Length: 420
Image 1 (tube, rainbow, N blue to C red):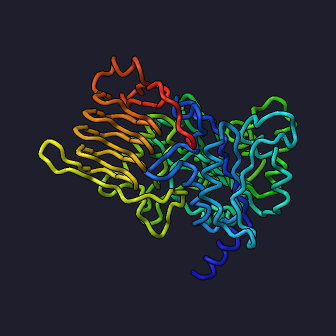
Image 2: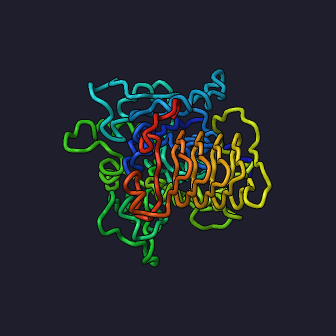
Image 3: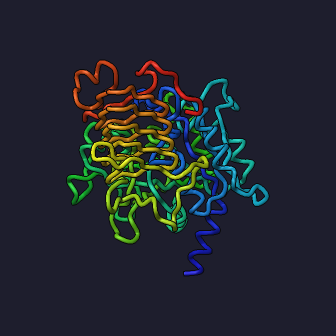
């Protein structure tokens, strides 16, 4: 046991993690009009980027580069404020690596190009292994076990993977593996995904997590760079091109206690983001934010506790089957099966249900809101009805395929708040 722990600890100390956080997140529509997808709030007090960063810290990986590009101001502010606690004298850091045109006079043109353009920085840290992560997924994962599997399998590249329903698999890289988990086929976003043997309703999908032995990474990035016909993307180009030449293995992400596929969410649409937030409200949610053994770290303001006021029969401040963050005041209003981020104000005689309310939202009196996702800083006018008449909602707001109403300050004719 202790030998195994020391083995993993040595591997994590020799690993540099790169979090790809420059994504536009266009499927989130107006929610990412002024922020990168990894900066989107999640879970009442966090941002999406906090999950892969927390996984690194909790796994013992203390050297992390965050590669940014698209509208990264709020993401940069968040990381500067919340992720400066690592010890520089121990060579631990979370560094921001914005697009700098270090190699080419262009911005990042793909995930592989984003790493290539920072090759000199990577070399300066002299890692044995490079862990490449997507900055826009929600999950808790010990990367040490994946690094150990990479070394024990004598792999050149290891790809994190998870089982997904076959009808959803066309949104991912889909792979086939042999009995030793060596990848034999890899197709990025195939129209007709191949099911897993013995599991016709499931496909084995890439999580966008890769472990590279460092020299292999350098060689393949340069090979891809010299090929003018590629899109310079790990999933589309590099992984499919190496499975015949190199030893590329899969690492199935499973719950070590229950021995089943572990919790992992790609919150890339309004529907999936809304659903993943509201899943947290359940009695025993798959993602346990109250787990002291694997905390999710973040920047948070110093705020007073949430407050619920008035107890009259027609004016009772209450929240049922809900999560309510610090600084919120529910004043003579009803909140049911909803998630309220910090400093939300819900005024008297209003009713909120099945909704996700981002920070600093002010909901006026006599409002009725359901099946909604309200963006940061919105001031909902008194008497508003949202989520009850789809035709009326579509005139002002964005309505998702499953009927979730996205409301942003711009849609209400209001300015976006500072620090979005």
